[in-house]
Image 1 (cartoon, rainbow, N blue to C red):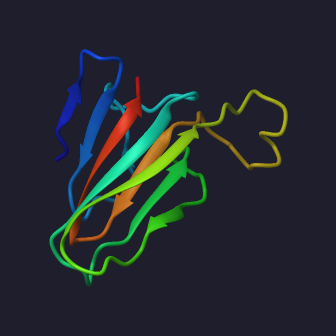
Image 2 (image 1 turned 180 degrees about the vertical axis):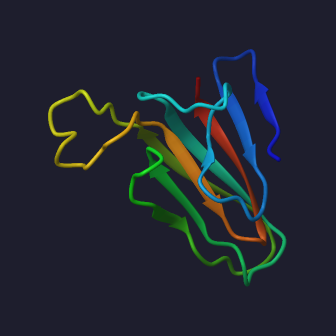
Length: 119
């Protein structure tokens, strides 16, 4: 189970625990088109299981933002990515068949703190 927090200075934080599969990055539990991930802070406890993937929409193609770390510890990754809207031009090309929004999959050795604007 992930912990979810909303900060007062116009940033939201969603924590995704190790071993999560397609976990919704959202304050409400349902990600939304237009959500923005500014940063992912990876807290690595085991370097053999620390892959981190995000995907835009539940049926979107996952892409890897982190795969290997040199040691255990905390590693920030700047992203600055915005989720798509299936109703905008080009959404058919991106194969967005459902409402967009961010989802994360984490390896068993990494917890990720996502910072951005989430609904």
